[in-house]
Length: 229
Image 1 (cartoon, helix red, strand yellow):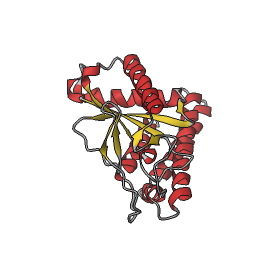
Image 2 (tube, rainbow, N blue to C red):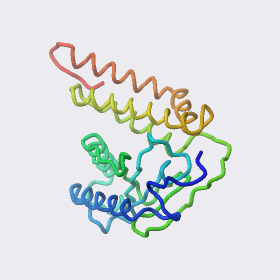
Image 3 (cartoon, rainbow, N blue to C red):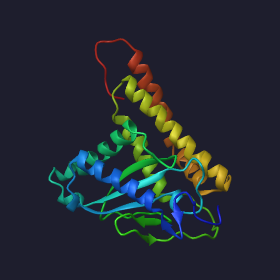
Image 4 (tube, rainbow, N blue to C red):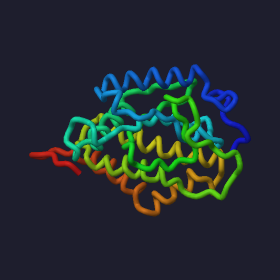
């Protein structure tokens, strides 16, 4: 836990102009490429450890698009899956960084609860929820837990291929880095490590590695047909 916000990102408790402009420029390109109408976006927010006091050199810039899911002109059943695929493809294909911090993209329904300790609106250039500089009793992050859980569950949908095996390795590395980030900043009882331990206790870390192993075996096996995991 640091005593002040990251000065690479913040100045006088406001997002640095060059950081905000870079994130908005990237956001507009993502929306253009994904063909999501701007009037279906209620906000673009910045959250995660770099929006608070528990950042490390391994932290990401978490960029969230708040979307009116029910107003998108595609089947309602497929809205979340559609946006999740855009997010997954973008995060896997691109390696954009701002001041050496990787950007991670996420889409969220306007009616969904965002459980985060700090939230900054890029559109309004103002805090929605300010972070606290005071160390509190750490507990697992509900937001990160369900985010990582969803990523791991989505791995089950992957077909055997070199690209998908490489993607699973990157997911494994990213989750390991998330835990390392927390151990460096807050120790064994930090939020990140407690979140990782909750995922492990509920079987998701084991499941992630099992999916990778099964995909590997199926890819290199020879048979009449290939099936999903």
